[in-house]
Length: 153
Image (cartoon, rainbow, N blue to C red; front, side):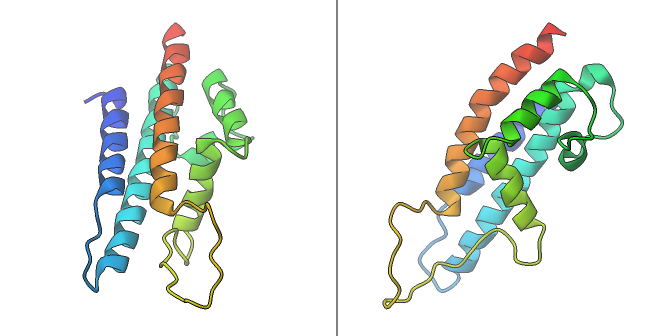
């Protein structure tokens, strides 16, 4: 399997996990959190596969996203394009890297749904699952453009 196929496979698997239903039993909240964090971990693997894919012409020895997307990372056009995208607060990559920082923290990325009738609900807040699905779609669109740029090399 080549890097492009692997990236596609990981994105597909992340999307599959994010769309699975958690069920209605007493384990549903924990199952939902497991599904969300598992999908997020696959999204991270897809990001690293994408980085390997679009930088293969540079023959880099390192493919971790924290290294390649840092300002001190290699000076490659594809990576700079991704760094610029990451700097945009509304971008899928900014969202993803923020969620990955949470995933790797002691608190994790998934949150239990608060079932407190006294709490005031905040409208229009998408859960992690829906945010992930939205950002997976945005990533797929951006990846197509990145691949075209990378092929030009």
